[in-house]
Amino acid sequence: MINHYERIDGGNFGDDLNVTMWNKLLPKPLSEYLDNDTFFIGIGTRLRPKNIPKGKRIIVFGAGFGYSDFPPTVNENWDIRCLRGPLTADALGIDRNKVITDAAILCKDLYQKGIPRYEVSFIPHHLTSAEDNWERVCKELSINFINPKQNPDFVIDDLINSKLIIAESLHGAIIADTFRVPWIPVKIKGHFSEFKWNDWMQSMNLEVKIEHLSSLYDRAVLNKKSKLKWMLKTIYGVLFGSKIGMYQLRKLINQNGFLSEKSVLESKHQEMVICLNNFVQDLEK
Image 1: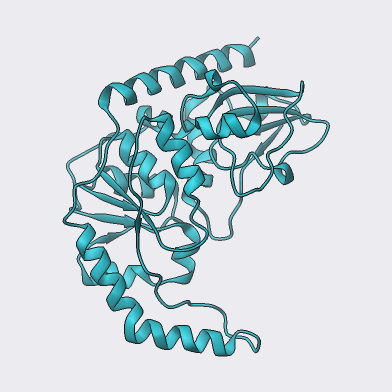
Image 2: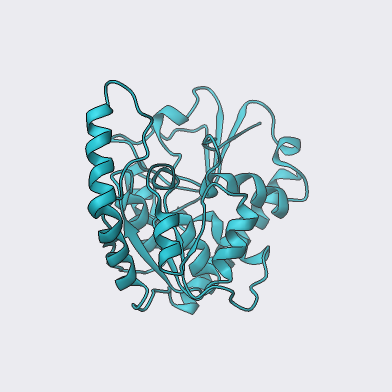
């Protein structure tokens, strides 16, 4: 069995949840249930043609489409248990009755929310965290910075023990919503995918405005081709970028965050648990 998720150098919270969550939820590791001719796709925006091997049985559990102009071709080898959102279903040409929500909602059964330690926490996209020094800006504003490259258990602990989450990381918002921590979505760089955010938000009956934050200076590796560009961005960042980012972020911490309706969350969680139980029963046949 191949458990497919994007292995990002240094780690990425949303993708790395595939390791921790499934191991905690299932009676046995997936590798003990499924053979090498089976390709399992769980949490993440992984339903892209380049990610789908030919000639394999494909199991989809809560994944979504995105980051591609063309969706993969679904055929008789696919076993779609559930999808992240209606936009994914439409892209794949699948009936929307396969839509529940992102599988990360199952973390609700694995972690315990305590007394909040942080008034506000900020979690960027993993690529933003590698390029911009938002940790320094957060420190200036007394905001808890959550590194999305950390162990998922540490990330979740910070998320669920905050009073407000400002998130460029989709799964930062998903976990916050699951544990009833208000959240505000922000877009900083071009790698932000409004499609996948809208896919998940529509699955939770949410219509939310995505805020924009200016990028800080790039911490790119200095080389001959990018030297001038890097220097200009660095000068801009030092003079203006951090100040603008700080001003924009300061405005957000005084806003009210968003939450899905409690009844919607409970209904989606119940659906996902039933889907998981049916999946486990089929695995153990």
